[in-house]
Amino acid sequence: MDFSLIETMRWQPDEGFVRLDQHLRRLCRSADALGFRQPQDAAGKLNAEVGGDTPLRVRLTMSFRGKIEITTSPFEPVAEETVWKLRIAPNRLKSDDALYRHKTSRREPYEEARAAFKKEEADEVLLLNERGEVCEGTITNLFAEAEDGHLVTPALSSGLLPGVLRAELIRERKARSEVLKLEDLKFRKLFVGNSLRGLIRAELVESDA
Image: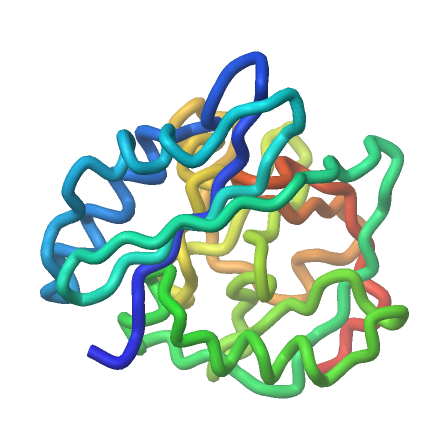
């Protein structure tokens, strides 16, 4: 295999890893689906790499043979009043490419989308599929506020990575999945989010793709 499985998570000095069980479950499911060896003592290896009084961004990378590598760096939370600028990627995701339903080092479509805009033009870039359905951001899932106050997020059938935060919000019935088009995002409060950063308020700067 010429790619690795990846999990990126947050470690807090006062509470340890955030959503660790969910991250490890996703890692195991992806390993099983893609024919990788199952991870051995991933939790123990993660805990051996953290400590101190600073929040950490922790990245776990696992090879096809099950070799685990862990890197850490200080994590700076996104300020509560932050609003990220969203743009629409010129390239499209293929809804039937099952590889992109797993978090791996094969990130070509996301890198292409991110490279289409300068950093000051976009904080995040949304990808659509070949049918014009909204999929996800390059590092986040998308959420739009519905009339009933719940969040709606693009459906897995559109072709996207089922993020850990997304799964938690759906499980807690704070969000539900639907097929979304760009016109469905208009006049709605938007958020993007992942397990590392949580939910971030967002606005779509342009809606043509």
